[in-house]
Length: 192
Image 1: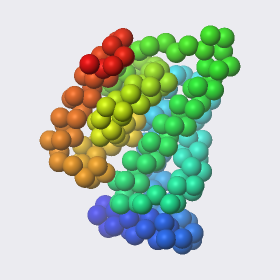
Image 2: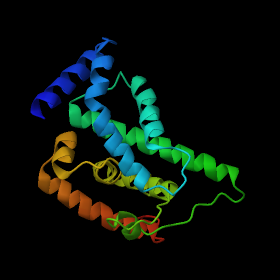
Image 3: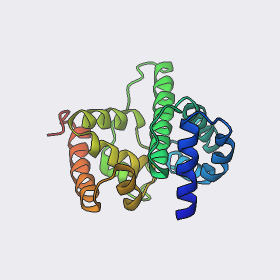
């Protein structure tokens, strides 16, 4: 994995520098991980969602191509950005779906229900996105920790690498962010 990680980092840097051919070598190295992240997203979606795992990965690829100017740091940073893009795709799809409905209001769901492993409950992507956006205004790093862990499926070590912070910082940010989001989603709009 270390050699794959180094190779992915080198390809990302070459791609950013304008070597378009590196994208063809990069995609096979990251495809399986992007599918794993997308599957994690899709497991949290309602049954019968119009997007499938492959479509979500493809949408992420399209948005990544436009993100060449990103100052890629490493493999973990790439997957963090990819997870963020997938989140945006799903939020955009949810908003579009709501706009087509009468009333289009999102049902609020408690974060404990959303974050519970194997809960099987459908989360309201729009409500969680609003909560994460509000949290980012208060503390962007905590919002990123939630996004990477919950949406991106990254483990603690990968989050440490992506955010370049200590493992204890990631654990503390996760605990505090979860409490903040629980308050926000239960009606305390300021999270405090």
